[in-house]
Length: 587
Image (tube, rainbow, N blue to C red; front, side, top):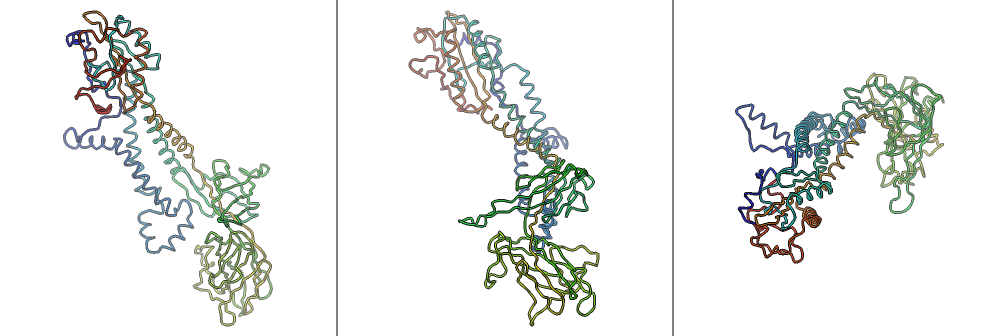
């Protein structure tokens, strides 16, 4: 086809770079535009709402969440926080100032969170409007020289040019392309779901962050430790601890009653994983509101919470509670009950205290109080030599209670709060026996006669306890839906290809028609070449290639690249040095 024919027959050519632009992403500015503060503010806004900054903020948010996973948080377990502070007295004040015990509500975490929100919103809104504009507009008109596109094909035919264009328009629409016929050429586009997936991914991230933000503002967490046979009503006075938020306080707690009927724990007894937990099941009964007639039974297991109203009850801990009876020197029972001991290792070596505030008069006739501290060993060794009081197995194969005795002032009458799991010995005196600190190893049913006429302590047996976390997080469903949709959107944006195909059929001065096809995809893929080849083959029914094509005067494709034998319509790669080396060079 001669140059003269091309110039006279071709319609006005659109901007090639506009035709090859397949993304609706806003164009990023190289630097500040405008003058003065307004120009700088506009440039900073464009930088904040760019995809690059959004990804950086998302990465920073992931890094900022790491301390919340490694360091105990006040919103999850205040007791662990206090224990951690007691064990790390040097760095605890620094962590306190850096808000590392309240990571997710800290100023610096909230700042990253808010900036990410603004960045995503500023990126999504204009991108959505641009995409709507692309959907409403017709596919871009065909470039002037289709044979300079990365993938193209051309041949001559004796068919009428208008009929060839109409056939191409029909075939492209049949293949699911959005096609438009005008100016002697057909423009078609496909793969809009790629940009839909891209927008869905970003909108889902927005929903994900929104769900987390809502759960942070309208969530509440309480903790409760119960010994077998105990129950409680979900009120602030009966919870061990409670952490509310701006829109969820103690007055918003869901009303229900929960009782721990029993606890089942099983551990592997043989093999390389001896002692590994195999079952933790809390058998409970509960009812919502105040109607006891609606009592229900259920079980709570690890990662299988109980849903009551708008709250979820999680099983987070387990241990043993020795049942002891304390008698004074007159033989009167001054204390009796099960006391939870806290596990210290994987074999449930547990420590705890028994505080007897109402002991009465001591051997000297003065009012006194008594305290006992010690260990509960589910499976005690025969001897403590070389190891000390440690358990050999988490199951209750050979339970023992090891106690030390103290007398004096427990400090419980001072009005100051105390840790129920620790014994303040500042005003206590440890009892002695034969010049040594008084202590005893007790098996279930055994009693210890205290020295100096202080009475006795009997280890009656033990029960199991379970600790529960009661949470109200209304944004979890939103965050979950956002996460699922984000994955679906990401899959669509990665695997769906946005692509364009142009077909032009032009009548030649000497008779016949020159047919040109070209395709452009947003990423390098053989799919666009395959589609163009299939279209060329299908178009042969309406525009068969002339048998004397190679003998005609003039080159039909304006290229010297030899054709593959047997298929004159096969797509060709452009030899022109000005042609892009890849399909993204003009993006």
